Image 1 (spheres, rainbow, N blue to C red):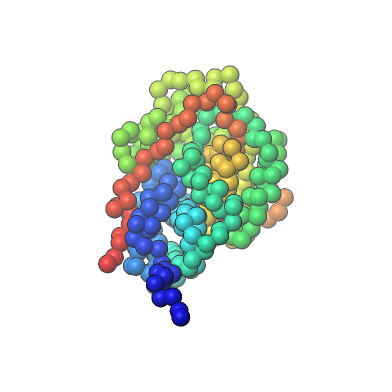
Image 2: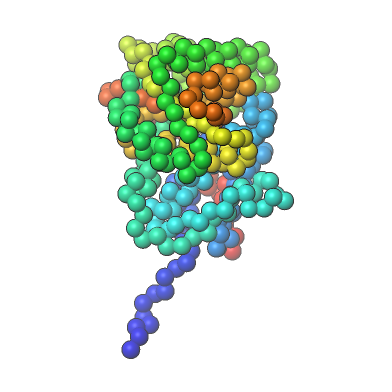
Amino acid sequence: MTDTSASPVRSVPDHPTVLAAMQLAGRAPSLHNTQPWRWVFDGVRLRLYRDDDRLLTSADPLGRQLVISCGAMLHHVRTVFAAKGWHTDTTRLPDARHPDYLADIEFRPWPEPPDGVLARARAIDRRRTDRLPLLAPTGLSELLHTGRMLVTPHDLELDVLDDSARGKLAGASEHATALRRYDMEYQTELRWWAGHSGDSEGVPREALVSDAEFARVSVGRAFPSAPHSARRGDLEDNARLLVLSSPRESVITWLHTGEALSALLLECTTAGLASCPMTHITEMPSARMVIASMLAHPGIPQVVIRVGTAPEDAPETAPTPRRPLADILTMQP
């Protein structure tokens, strides 16, 4: 006789699983912590939309970084669902008539996801953006090997710049900062999104660095300065600079860039390394040309990432705030 008492295997995750997964995946990084995504779960599919109300019209007029941010959230979502036993079949840009509709996810059971995926899912809650000086990264060759395996499926290249490139990149960063210094629209936008504590979005004051700390990093966005502080005051920055580059420029490339960035940042955390993605350098065409000239192959730089080791005695930083789940996810009946 056939045993009919066993429960049928579900073909989609139930609502509590979706809610828990999306809550954790919402830890994904985004430009100025704008969290520019909207999700809809209709009981069968999970759909990702860009939220153009969160477009930074001065820093990111084309929406490149907005889409990269959405790609990072997409990868976080897929990683969390994998850890919960669900494979995510993803269609990117599923409807050309709706350019804000970035991805469509369908589910099927995945009882034994790879160990690397599980490790990256566990890293989501621990990942932070570290803007302070860092020691040189340990195990960089292993990170690059794994990182390249993670980004290659997204048709991207991962390169590490040699130490001689730091001066050129610092110069490009300073040039980008100088061009923005008297851009009042940019400065107003930056101050709107950074330096305010207690909000559910933006970069809180306690996540920023002081002028003294910023001076020792040499490559980074000039956010509003935090109160005077000299954390890691005896440490000059020895982080290595990694570059994600693409063969072309398109919306789907930007989405893939965000996914690759997410995978790389989580792999850094899994390896015990600190990281800081930097997109301000790639906002300016002149700076992108400088970075491109440092690569050993043709490519369009999309993101630069500082990777290093935080000192053992460095205090744990608090997580940056996130918007309430109800603000980013619609659960349809």
